[in-house]
Image (tube, rainbow, N blue to C red; front, side, top):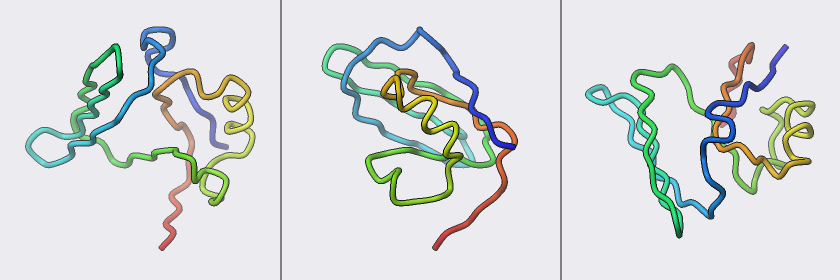
Length: 92
C-alpha cells in the first residue's frame, strides 16, 4: 500500500515557486525552486523515479487517492513527499 512521507516538513517557506529539474548521470537529480521571495535547491543524487504533481492531478489514476485527499485538504502545504510502497505504473 502506498503512503506519502513528508520531507523537509515546515522547513520550506510558503511562496509561489517555479521549479527546474536537472537530472543526469553526472549530478543525479537536482530540483531548483525559485519563488518571489525565496530560492533554494535540493540535491537528491541518484534516484530511481520521480513523480510530479501539477494541476493535472485529477486526470490520472497513478496517485494514491487516499494520500492525495489527505494532503489536498492542506493545499499540499509541504513541497516534497517521499512515496513509500508505490507500485510501478507506466502510462503512455
